[in-house]
Image (cartoon, rainbow, N blue to C red):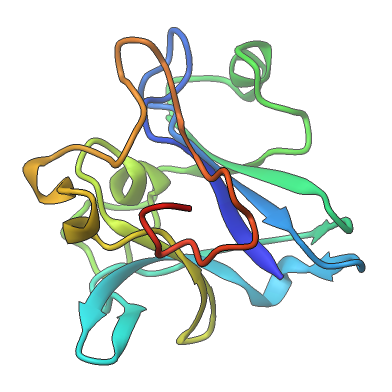
Length: 170
């Protein structure tokens, strides 16, 4: 029932490093997020799987029926209040710097969401519940996301919540 609905890979006005993503609860009930994660995925012969080189970002709290939640990267040199002033809701789950991109313990949202596009997913352990399109579906291997604009601060939004997120047309 939880899907990735929008990706702010371009950051926020005045804070391009403050990347974020939004999840949406399609179900008629509140969902406990404490067992779910946002994970970097890799393509396998049987579909998308959790990438072993990147630790998942553990989600916290709950999400109301048909509700949204933002997960955002908070650079160490930027205050939470600054990011909220830039447009993030007070209910945002902030992720701070924890490691280097090469570290298997890395949980930096900036690394998995930043300027190097990748396939992301909502996961329950190793099970992929929802996924963005794989890199080759949108030509992302050239270093660009399916949509959005860094200069214009336009995010990548999902327009059909009923379609699988791994489909380029959703």
